Image 1 (spheres, rainbow, N blue to C red):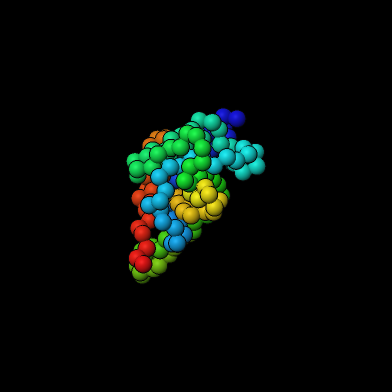
Image 2 (tube, helix red, strand yellow):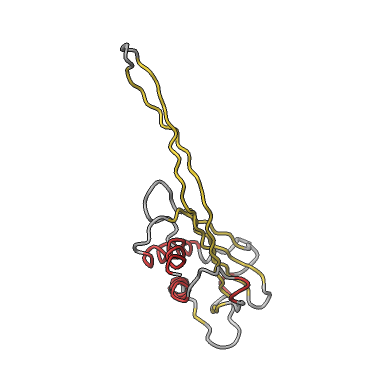
Length: 181
């Protein structure tokens, strides 16, 4: 159980652990939606066993929710504690194994003093983690905004700081600017 918990924590690091991998942030949204009409948010009810990563423990779930709520509140949204909010929030996580191959070219002098080119291939295997944050219009039950962070999962240190940093970067593009009519 402890190793599953560590694997999950590593997933949420999203690559802020240094190395050659970087965190890729991406957002998408429905251009027909007026995001200024949204003022409240709430968590989308979901069955724990059917839609959630089984490795998510309560500590990490609370950490992720705290990071997302903090960004929404900082953006002027209020958490709806009763009734239906304007938007529902839901997050998803995933990991997969990746392999990077890098050709390293070297030049040097051989035994007879001639310049030669040699090379080697460096193969690096790592886990790639993804955090997806969705905002769903509560009235229409349609996805209106999605933010994603994807990167290498390497280091178990500074988990909370890295998670909050990834969520902050995702929400830099929220709310999207209004479309010109």
